[in-house]
Image (cartoon, rainbow, N blue to C red; front, side, top):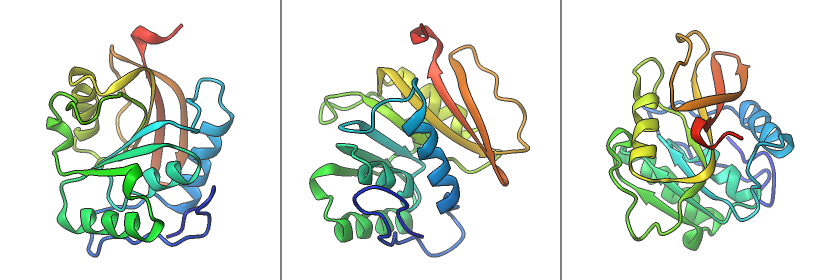
Length: 191
């Protein structure tokens, strides 16, 4: 796997050994970032605060950093995945721009004081068909992790049931092979 755009374009991304993670393909990542770069509702990546939840290798967060994001918080419980993220932080020289949070994404709690500012863009790539993404979305709201106009990029299986919620507006939907990507905003902030 490689970073597909920005200052680190072409740089390899270490991935954890085993089958516990399912990295977003280079092609799907490029397509997602093309949507984010051109949609008028998308946050400006330049200087953005980003979360990569169920981070795996951290490919989505590193892609955002490569394209100008100021900071990325990687949320991941798997030891091998956190090791791959740390390897990527080191190889890309991003120590001051990242933090790895060993926490269950469905039990994030309240945003700690060390994360003073809320997040503008959240990548949510949970294991498919387990309801974990929906639970993490609830935690993000309850824990005050999101900025007022935050955008969520939620990857799920293309054949999963329709996403229905009172809290989120689906701004855009894209399908890339077996993956469906929902671009979401909180309904209370839609104008």
